[in-house]
Image (cartoon, rainbow, N blue to C red; front, side, top):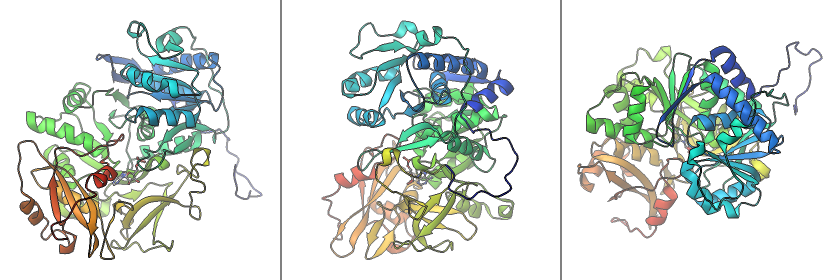
Length: 550
Ligand code: AMP
């Protein structure tokens, strides 16, 4: 695989392949009694240990082998964060097959497209998704069998799904006598399709090597900082970019794992945080919105929760301030994407920031942070010329590193790299000391009179208004300026604010010409399968919109 020259004097260290199975082996051997707690689809709380997980993963690996699964075969899952999904993570990849996690929030047509494109051989799924699987199974051309991840007494009496087996029957019928095979670390381990808001979804095919390197790097203190002293609750789903690598980094660190299952509402999350004494969590901003609203309504506090990583879309500064100042929680703002396994940057302060005022520290923490060692980044103009890191010039953000894709699965989209760098589609500014700030997705940037207006800043300011629950900004056609910003707002329950008050709120916070031309109030914003606001849907909805100034 290596395209680089060999030295006449090679190092004399063991050449042990970096394989996903080594994590579960390590976890069992060194932290075997540590706990994994799951809220199940069935509603109850399930508890067992790393050692139990390893045993059942080996039983599942034996079962899959008997079903004829071979190295490189794709095995799909449609499942929440839970212990059986974790077993599948290790059994499938560990045995040399490829775990294909499918996002259940996609439409049945999208799921069938993805399963056919991936040529999935088996699909394992949670009970919640029985009707969904019934809706698309007939359209899947490669799936030989379906495995329902539930207790035996919950199996349906009749179903349209062909070749349906119970996961627990498979576990029960197979021994734990299984030795994880050794193979090339560049073999594929997992497959995850991009959300595909435009065009068909494309697959990012992670290798064992990229997964292990990402797990090491993401566990470091100035990345996610996963430690054996933590109790970790990943809200970020295991069907979206491997839950940011937490199923790997938590087990290699020996932390206690807590899975929320399907219950991601504020009340259920709060109860689990408290009952299991969760110290660390990770998720997209929309999840924290639900939790914080529930806590504010019920006047609650956390007793153990200390740190959270927020990413997937820009963390609104108002949310970060509430978490930090009202609840005493350290917020690490992180940036990445499916094509990057996903972690690219994380924002933590350094010793040199100690002398800063609270406002100055907050301003640093609001950026997407520093590149994690292993990832390199740069900004370029439209001609590909590198731009300075001066804290004000913005450009297209490019990345490279051992856990960044080199091409999509089956080479969809052709050669995606630009001189060895992956174009992220994001627009960013980088400070002289390497803190990166995303200003927008390049396709969301508003082009007004030949200048660019970043929508994230406009949304963040609106979200800072006490009556605003959610905000999205889009460009709408303007006869003179090409495009001007329109702000779409969801008010907090029981709160009110007028358009004039909101526009006045921008005064002194940004250049005057960035101020939105108009505000529209709506009951809800469209949210996509990964918890992000769907700007293309909003643009569609407001495509005939006439601005008052136009
Ligand atoms: P996905 O591949 O679905 O995870 O989406 C990746 C995209 O989400 C990135 O290219 C960014 O546009 C956006 N994104 C992720 N994290 C952040 C963040 N912290 N701030 C702003 N945008 C983000």
